[in-house]
Length: 329
Image 1 (cartoon, rainbow, N blue to C red):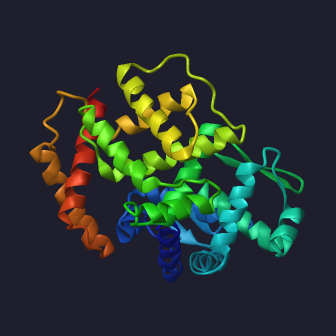
Image 2 (image 1 turned 135 degrees about the vertical axis):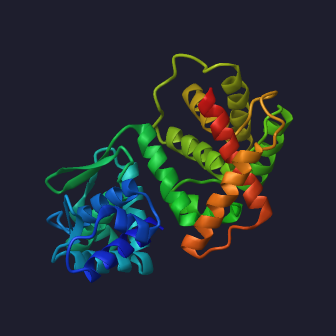
Image 3 (image 1 turned 90 degrees about the vertical axis):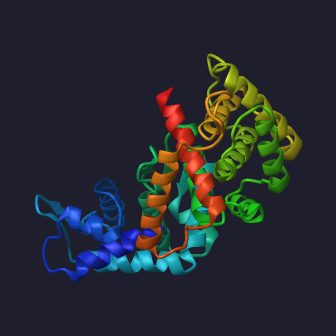
C-alpha cells in the first residue's frame, strides 16, 4: 500500500505543471501531511541524485527525474524485483558485516546496477524504521539496534500479508520467505487467545498475528546469536504473567525458550492489545465504538474497500478501546 501511495503521489505531481500544496496532495491521497512528507523522503531516496520531488513554501513539484522513479515503483509492485528485494533484505539481516554488491549480484544472477537499484528500494522502505543503510565502498550494511531490525522484519512480513492477517497459513509462508520458520501458528493463535482470556484479559484478535510473528522472530534471531540486551527488571506483574504464557507457547510451538529480555518486551507488545482485569467490561465504550465506525466508513469510501464486516468492526473497536485505556495509564 505504501509503494502504491508513493506512485500515486508522483502521478499527481507529474500531471500538474507547477507546485501542489501539501494539504492538497494529502487530501488527494487520503492521508495526513506527515505521511506525505514520509512519501517524499522515500521517493527521493529512490532517485540517484535524491531529487525526484522538490519541496518549497508552496508545496511540492516533480523534477525531470520523477518519471523514472514512478516507473521503478510501478515495476517493483508488479514484477520480480519484489522477491529480489526481499532476498536482499534477508541477506542484510543475516550479514553483520554487510553484503558486497558485486558478490550479491553474482549470487542473484543480476547486474551490479540492478542490485544498486534494489538497494535504493530497500532504503526507501527504511523510512521511519530507525535503520539506515551504511556503505563502505562496495559493502552495504543495515545499521541499527537489534530491536529496530526485528521491528523492520516484522513490518516487511506483515506488508506482504495485506488483508490476510487472520490467515495463519499465509503468515507462515510470509515469515518463512523472510527466513523466519514459524510452524503451527494456527494452534499458537488459538492457544494464545485462550490462555490470555483465561487470565482475565480482553483479547484483541486483530493483533494476534503481530504478537505471534514477533515471538517467532525473537526465537529465530536469538538462535542465530542475535539476542537483545537483557532487561534490568521484569516489568511488573502483568508482564510477568503474559511473558510466562508467551515463553511456554514459544517452547511448545517453536521449540525454544524466550530470553528474559524478550519475555518482558513481547509481553509489553501483547499488553497493548489487552485490558487489565477489572478495568473494563470487555466491551468498548459507546463513544469509541461509534468513532471507529465513522472512521471505517470514511476509510471504506476513500479506498474503495468493504470494511463493514461486523466481527472486524468489533475487533478494531476493541483494539482502539484498549489503546485508549493504556494511554491513560
